[in-house]
Length: 314
Image (spheres, helix red, strand yellow):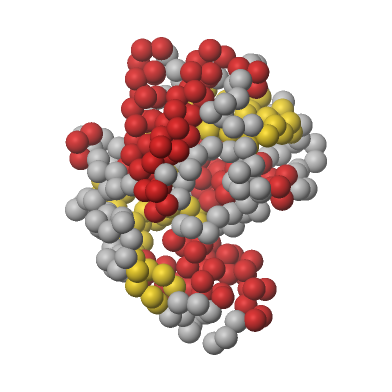
């Protein structure tokens, strides 16, 4: 089997490629535009795995050149910092929607199966537990990022019905956990970073006791492996969520390692995304077992970052 990964050097992709074992794939093609300059994600890749890296922008590249003969495409390339997407809506549309359209059409032409990571942010404000079967008019994306992901989902579902594209859509919870290409604009990693540095943790003013869905990075990788191994390209949407937790739950976990943390409440444009829980029953019923947990993820992240604390003031 031949694998191709777009956005291969980012938070999820870098962990994914460093966990590929010899013999799992005939070869692994990596595409990344290097916009974030995560060169270190390519360091010390697993020996015995045939990697091929290309610096390419999916919106401009001749994808057929890379997709020919590939069995599975994991499409991770995207603009993912939701709060910042209000200031670059056109770019988000180009990369997250039109880029996905281009990837999906290349998959069709080359008969590749597609794993597409969407986001639980498409649910937006909800008053109760939500799952994949909720009506489309219930979905309330609160940012251009979430809007672009939902639009891409609809495109894939249409291509699946009309053109027989084989895919699976993952609505991922907010990622936590360490990787060589990890990012720090998502809640858990950002909180750990601020806590280790000894600066006040920035919390959205309305968010402290509201529940949100979170995803252990190791569970995210296991979910992708599961789909490939089980050939679960059934054109369905799956919520991939380890735990639903409040921001206060996360802060209490951090306090176990750094008890003197301080909180600074901030206002952001995504202020109306209130509490919601996301069910992961559909994916569990398909046979997948979630094994991650926030407590362990926070401990690993703080351990990784603790060297930066030497110059902080308490």
